[in-house]
Image: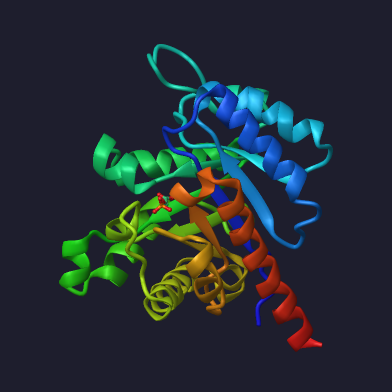
Length: 267
Ligand code: PGA
């Protein structure tokens, strides 16, 4: 069993306003006593990064990391509406999302931009979650692994093996995001193993074994344990269920339980 610390992300997307965001962050820090060895990251909307970051910092230490949902790859300049990595670092963001399906398919980001963004964030010293995943019609044509491989290869082009220790892949089948439909645990495992295979070819077996691959797409407390129990599923990227403290905490606990089970069976 590879020793990969599970990573649970809460992608708040374009939801919540200031008071709700702060309240949710407070509730999470108060109730995540010591979730180690699970890494927890929350991704609030831009206007609330600072306020949420203050809540996380006031809890002391690094219990929950602050993440940003988006950014631009250029350092500064005439890019109306965009936010730079140095601005994010200024408000203590440690993790960024790149290639989320809503940015690919709703906003229209392509692989070339996603790759520039991944490399810029790594060069800036941040952790990056690269999201990949197939659309429903691609799954129906049995193209899941090919789509994931292509998005992984494009997204990580030019990334060094050393930088890979700050990269997480999130496998998020587009048809499962926000729909209440989840990939079966077996299908998720299969897709994750294939992505790890792609990483083996691109980098090395050692790098591939060390990279965490999260599953995303309608993960909730009720299905988390089964998904997280798969050998190549190293965490979850949670949208809707991350907006409710109870649900999100239950998912974090499911990940912690898996880790403890794995640790005790390795003894
Ligand atoms: P969901 O979103 O949990 O609401 O399906 C997951 C995501 O888009 O990261």
